[in-house]
Length: 393
Image (cartoon, rainbow, N blue to C red; front, side, top):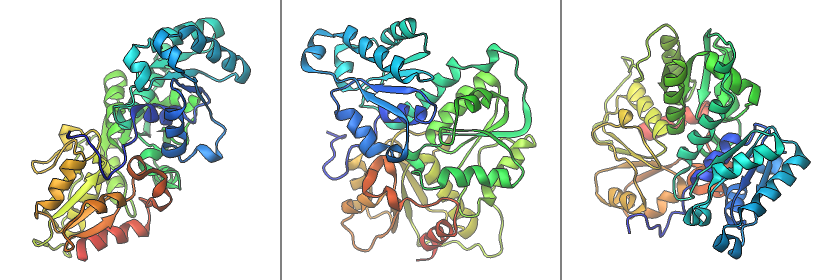
């Protein structure tokens, strides 16, 4: 019963991650379900939906289709929609019921492509895996399909990609634009930001970059694939506050130093607050970036990151917790080991000790539309003040 949630809502699933990765690329996304999962994605996991022109359909799966496995019906619907809308590609995504009956998504996609001549993808998403895996899956599939290595391309020195950028982690209220602008305004051109503010043409140029900047766990998975396939090194982290720390890390990497750990600066005003025992619960890369800033600016050492969703072992410190669920979070909060907690606002409901100081950090994949209007701008004086408050309260 470890995965049972009594207070927190279900976290965003893999099909939402794939759809998020493909959302801006001009394709047609079809979620194979009876409308519940499609509604879940569009209504609760996709802040861009209301102001977009993206094509997202539900396959309209019914009981007898599930019993008999009526793939012909699905293919006909996708072909008819594709011929009408003329997308750049089609993508069929799975959900729990098709998973149970063993739907062959790649086979369906191959038949759709044969009938329409439009590049088509089939994703074996299940709805029981977290969104970050889906986000990486969707982005890597696009890179593979539209691989520029099939034609001649060359590396462009000093240029970067930002990978793992999704509204499921950063919402859509300026975070993506400000991260891209940070590098561009400091003389570091950005070829592609996967997967916000992106086009299919910029995806095709992404392998030309000298460096990838992974801003989430999904970004790490994408960066590892691009390192193996195209030889592009990567660094990990989210630029916070004025972004200077991450800028320094990227500049060093462009000059040949690709160590992932941000150098902790010696500052005269640093001071260690031994009484502070901070627990950061959230997406791994953002949580670790906040920890780095707290140590760099304030010398606070006793900080534990409890990773929701998936995590990269290379970023875990000995005290960190990987893959925490609601029960794990409750146990950590009742342990008495922490004086301060940073987490999505819904996590506050699990705190029983009134002495714990709580700092809300909304995350779309957790609290969805309940809090996505309150998502913090990572590059802003507000974020700098947020980090200061954690350190000094």
